[in-house]
Image 1: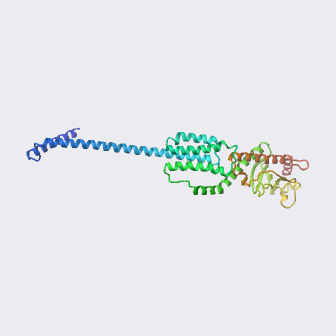
Image 2: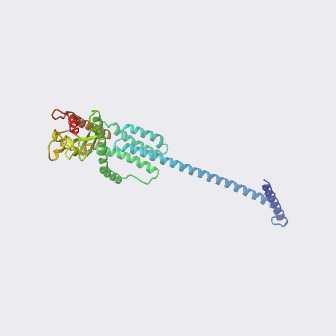
Length: 347
């Protein structure tokens, strides 16, 4: 505080000496000195006002810039989130009314507040197209053309959003064509993989309800294997042949397959002593028709995921009925398969 007072005293003293010297030595004309001082004060005042306006404008400009950056970051975030949700709806190549309802909520609370009005209108127009498809889902034929129309609306919405935030990319007709070709090579295989997983899950559940001695079910080398477990050993497998075949109408067969380690114990019950039949119990069931072909991708083409799930469940139920009937109905010398197994592995 003392230093500030000292500096102020020196400043006033210096100013007084300077003015006195200017008058004594006639640096300034004394007659016009007041006018000059007044003009200088006016200049200082105007300069201060202009500087204040400039600083205020610069501050407001900086605040506006920071606000615009935050708004753009939030806009980019909500647009990207919407694109993610839209693509999740389209992953199964079908869109339901329930999914559209969720998208409508996102558009109302996230897209419209940030998007340009004309872009919001364009997005709502495409969503209305999708709603028309979803409403007529029970009547319409799920053809390739219909799916491409839905895809077109999905891609158009993505283009609108990406263009507004200046991502630079665009799904052009050429890119759409390439994406379709890529889907043709990848999606059918993935769809069949999912179909198989659903089929085996259903098959296991259906057979588990029957309380058989089957411990596990799995595919191997074009055959479905059902492990029949006794005393922690699996001497016999129930097998379903030709589960993946070129001709879907070709019938399949059911049999009890004997593990190599137990061939001797089951020698009296084998279909043959030599050849491939030596590994099978007597009583192979041939010519079973109407069994799903897990190698036929065409059966799940152009259907929704819900329809594929229904088909998977029905196919699993059909096969499980055949397996259960064969398991419970098989007999030799008035003995069922479980009695034969116990007799052979205990000898």
